[in-house]
Image (cartoon, rainbow, N blue to C red):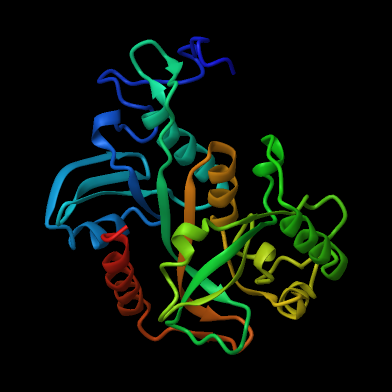
Length: 294
């Protein structure tokens, strides 16, 4: 879109107080370093560590708290589950900093956000124990969000994605996998105490993650193939439902994104955390120490 072209009311919806529609947040109410969580209740788990909370908002499943740790201004935003919600949240976060809400045009000088997901995930490597923390070096999407946007992969990403397509046989027509790398400016800060590897983002919790209750699986070998995948030194470590969408939208909109997960289940060892809440709290505390210094 031309930067001088006015964005119609039907395309960028603002509510009666001039806030972006789904998040119910105005530009001045958002920090430029943002933590995303899936669970709306987890927003308060993060913001209780703030020295000061200046504003709170809630609309549907989207909860936002903005405040400070020391002099560092932070916002925590709940996304809900899945990349369809990520599409909403990332577009509206970008609009809050890069679109002038008065004349509805794209700003000449764009702002690059830091967006860090603190979530939960299942391990696909038997050597990653439950309650451990994983930094996603790449997001590998089995959902259908990113094919709707124009974006380009790097040569390294194309090679990794081609290797995945060769080694993992998905049901024809089920998806068009995509892959995006984490922001290295953020990932390089989260090394000690964190595992790292490729995170697969799935479009569901049951069959798309190899779980069968009563419904039959169309790809019963999914877990084995994901676990066996390798390309040079890259391996798949875990899967969940948001990371690739965040990384992809970060690429499309030019923001720095990182995803950090607490491992609440090891699917290979068929283990589940005995105290996932405590492990998530440790991830939040440990990660906030780093985030507050960004």
